[in-house]
Amino acid sequence: MANIQPFRAYRYSSAAGDPAKLLTQPYDKISPEMQQRYYEAHPKNLIRVILGRKEAADSESNNVYTRAGEYFRQWVADGTIVQDAAPGFYAYFQEFTVPGSDERVVRKGFIGLGEVVDYSEGIVHRHELTLAGPKKDRRQVLAHTGAHFGQIFMLYPDREAVIDAMLDEAATGTPVTRLTDEYGVVHSLWPITDARAITAIREQMADRKLLIADGHHRYETALAYRKDNPALSDARFVMMTFINMYSPGLKILGTHRLVKGLDSFDTADFLRNAGRDFAVTRYASVEELRQTWNAPNAEKVQIGTVFTADPNAYLFELKREAGDLDVRVLHDMILSDFLGIGEEAVRDEKHLKYVRGVDAAVALVRNGEYQMAFLLEPPTIEQVADISFGGGVMPQKSTDFYPKLLTGMAMYRLEQ
Image 1 (tube, rainbow, N blue to C red):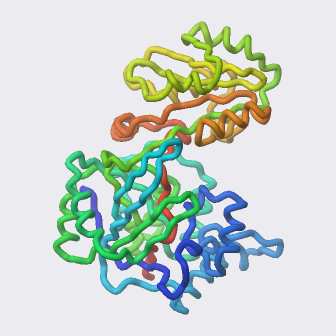
Image 2 (image 1 turned 60 degrees about the horizontal axis):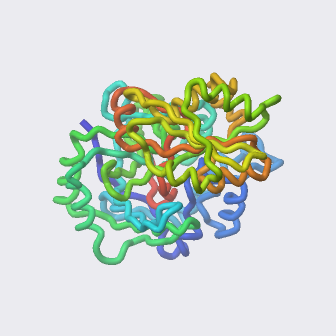
Image 3 (image 1 turned 90 degrees about the vertical axis):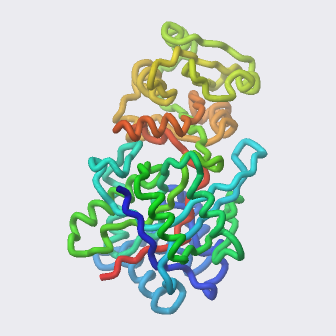
């Protein structure tokens, strides 16, 4: 059973300033340019804790991790960050426009603590593998601060939207936090401290399977930290945002693959080779391709393709067998077999770039920066759930759940 608990979150105080200048996107979505912008936004922006800048004079005793711990402890001591008086869950709503459309939706979830358990227990399920480097980095931040600042993005099945209805009841009145981020997403937070509401949510969540949408590295970091600190009871839990996987506000975007650096690549030869396995259709433009390739196809794998110095667009189609994912076919057949980009090269992002948005991907090919782009429709939540709950994993960057959860909306400090 899923062990979900309320908690007394630490949050920026109202006196700290505009939360839009204090909170950040998740650490792994922060570019160097964003990092600089966050540093300039406010002297107590959370970037200094979650992803600090390296300095020339860094040493074993003075580095990004030691400074992270010092900043956090200092901000708690001076009242910049304060702990809520009562334990609770936190209704967390995100209102946004779906990229590439005019659709405006609200994604509803709640922040709470979830017990960290091994995947083998069948309670928490992953859908992708992790890398050692990011886990080592996140472990250092956790060890030096003794706190979690970002939430694991956790999905649960609730077709009847029972919990969503409870969250609607809680999300009345003025939120304790509301801000609009750099992508135009409106984030709102309401504490849920009523004992009956807390009990009702916990009871509803008890028998739900949990699927990690984002935060695999941080989840596994928390799990390892728990195992290494068995006497620290707070380490049994990590902060999570729980979102109904069948909510109309849950959106998965396509993540397209761009390729460069392939010697002696010839478009005509590639198309001939691909035609042995795929039905290849040529279109005069990407706009024309979109008229056919505009929604996931249950019967066919469909992969759009554009090449540099070629004004046309192409659609590769293959009969979909049970369990086939477009991204898996792309990786196993096209990238590996046709182009020689194997798993290790994919893992190291050699030759590859991942881009959200068809127009952005096509532009990078048309201007000659990349040799080709493979355009993918996003997987459905049913596909992700079937693979994850079945014990399987997907290729890296197969899913792009939009928008991301802001770091610092709530913080969980492990009391020593």
